Length: 442
Image 1 (tube, rainbow, N blue to C red):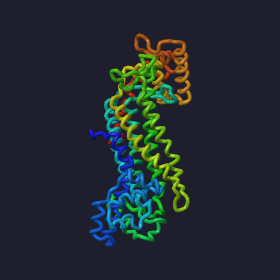
Image 2: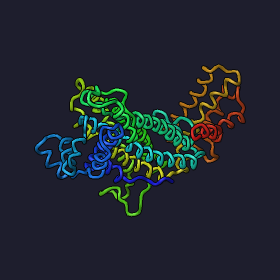
Image 3: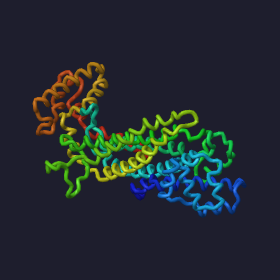
Image 4: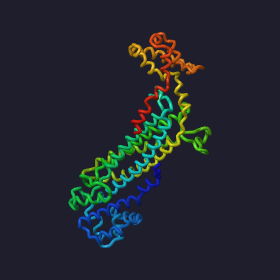
């Protein structure tokens, strides 16, 4: 298994120290690019790359006077350089440094998220194969429908998260663009080759066109991809919360020795991890609207996006990283109860086989409308019997629905007892699971 990334690694990528480190990477790459273009001498380039450094405390001190973080950052670096400092940030504007550094920061953060997602997908796939043929009831509108397998439920989760992975890969591609086009994006003070060489040194691509900033539709698509991932993860968490309900109890979160569920009720084992994942996913999705609003900046740019991104980007990446780690561990340790799944499958006295019977009757020459009428009236009788407290299954392991059908004269005129009983076969519903799995887990 791939080593799990710790939350600290992601958090470190969004620290103040890291922000300035990314800025410095961009500034030094620009110096090297100017050197390759013959504008900065080898000696000056070497001195800058060797001696350029910053001090966070000093930057804070300078910024109190300048009220400008990039100027304070550059001043702090220049204090460690000689005359060669005149070539630092040459021909650049603040956003050349900030946006290119942010692209690098987001690209690397998305790589961590993709590694997190890979681990989650591996965990789901493993559990899916473990429960490929574990029968359970499928539900629509919260009401019992037909038999499925728990493996198919997990397969749905896997396939949906693969879609989210594709969006994240596309987002990573889309955000991996920097810019050094200058204050208005017109390259008035530096050649296009400077931008191209700088970005190449950083492992980025040059934005085809920019004004003072890299356009924020790129950032909005990254945030949207993370939000879609979160929506799918919440879907999984909500399902687990349902499975753990006392009346259902088909699966539950692992409850460790010494763990407590309630300060008042010692018996409680609550789905706290999946509830936590649900809440985290709400926070992640909440950033979509501000990210979209950041797209419409005034003219060549304003600074309204900056304050949003200082909160939004560290929070969404760190929260997504934590959420994925939590959900992966939840899936890995999930307790599954096949016997309870089978018990619930029998709760409705065989009604889950109604469609199977319905589809047999047209093969015997009956219209679909008449077939539906026969099956439904017997099903409604079973619902009534269940509501009155009758047992769903008798001592001979015969369900209420089977007994009702066997007594229906219209049905018996078309189907023999053997034909009817043959419809009450759980294995029938697993006959295509292998084929489904071959499509999902290629």
